[in-house]
Length: 124
Image (cartoon, rainbow, N blue to C red):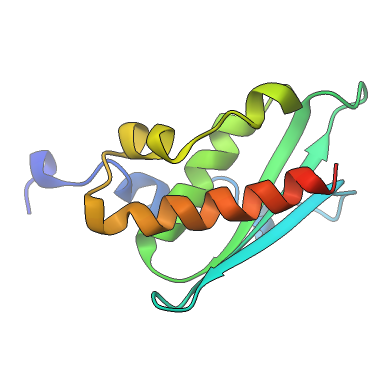
């Protein structure tokens, strides 16, 4: 596979920057989980708010599943950092598809992360 054939999402899988293990213990105000039994994937998204309580200071994830699910979670955490809660709630599956150039068969990974985030937002 040449570098021109490498999927965009692969860099997020190979070197995730927001995996939960990279963070010291901190107070997470929002936590949400989702799974896709058919794809055997589980995602947990965690959100830490800034001092104003209106901005996401840090986002982290835990994913057990295919590489594309890890990539979607990592990208979402990157995108969420320093966004207001209102702006963060606008993140859509289409945003994942465009940013990571997901194939239609990989859309489930974006849905998985979006579902986990929706649950995390309900905790805020």
